[in-house]
Length: 446
Ligand SMILES: Cc1cc2nc3c(=O)[nH]c(=O)nc-3n(C[C@H](O)[C@H](O)[C@H](O)COP(=O)(O)OP(=O)(O)OC[C@H]3O[C@@H](n4cnc5c(N)ncnc54)[C@H](O)[C@@H]3O)c2cc1C
Image 1: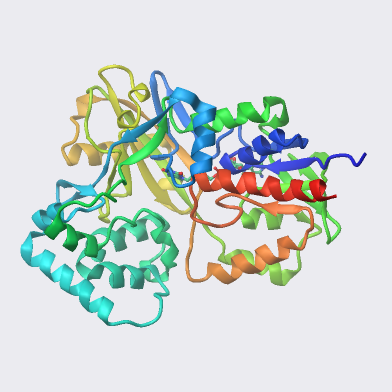
Image 2 (image 1 turned 135 degrees about the vertical axis):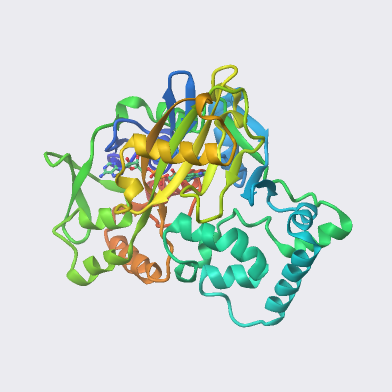
């Protein structure tokens, strides 16, 4: 009998965990190596006393019915359907997101709303080829008034690059409800049914519960935490072993890496040709500094997430975890979770936790959300490789590196950083499941 291939899974975020979970269901042996001391990657829930908060405001989107059904099966009653819309903070007011015609009209006033509508009509009539940058996409689709107010500065803050250098792909799915055509038609016929942005799934104990359940299903024995992968040994055609923590060497039949594309490349031993190595300089990831404040008040906002598009705020969004699940804060108290996107040389990325907490504390007091004496304490974290920076330079580099790595017959790349895509948790689980299916198929065919 042909022995089953042993899979080395690199990284224990949702993508790596989905590979392990799926391998286990198919009876394929695997070992998962995770550098940090916990599973979940950027899909985790932290705890401080009785407060719980996620690695950034997370929601499980119901966009892949098979994945949703599997997660429902794994979490049972702990997975709840939530209907809490988000909001945008603009000029001291909170407006509903996705924007609705009535609110936008009230917020901008008839003159500015009318101008915005005209801008869109003009931009659409202008024609031209597909927009090459996010700025061109935003101006064409929403017009200058809306784009400048809500989108361009926000995107620059989030991705750390001018909107004119970003790919239109950074629009992601977040903007799907933000369409002036919708505003205009809604202002005539009323709010449409497709405004379902506020509906999502969320686990009772935080988004990390999904990662933890996947890890349970993998079998904890197969997961090695505190096990950073440091080298990938190869013979030009296949990876034959991985090195853990610079010492231990493990033979591999198949390697599935969810590590960043440039890190996977840099770990190859012998190193790739210089022309491939050079491509790495165009691959950048955005980091996120998280700050949470614990508040002595039962509730503060009614939103899943509040977006702060303006430059004067260092954070892009603030969420209130208990609006996703009441179990995220003790009775009578709440918390606020701020996300500050950074590059590694930014002051706030390098700053100590207290400094970051103080920056957020000062801002939420200044906008009148809380009084200083209500803040019971805080915590801060660093999220690495939070977003692949999809700028004008990256596309050909991603393609070149991916093509080179695809030359190794037994190496598969998965995950947000591994595939360099702006994907969501359900996409990561889909990638893991599909990748294991591809690995398993030849065995079934043979
Ligand atoms: C702020 C924020 C908000 C988000 N909100 C949502 C949301 O609302 N809904 C949604 O669906 N998705 C959301 N996402 C996206 C989601 O979190 C990611 O798509 C997902 O975490 C990516 O999973 P992954 O396994 O590809 O990578 P990661 O989660 O980044 O996991 C990679 C893992 O690899 C490990 N690793 C790195 N180097 C090594 C090494 N050398 N050896 C071994 N292990 C290593 C890391 O420690 C990490 O655990 C959000 C992400 C962020 C950052």
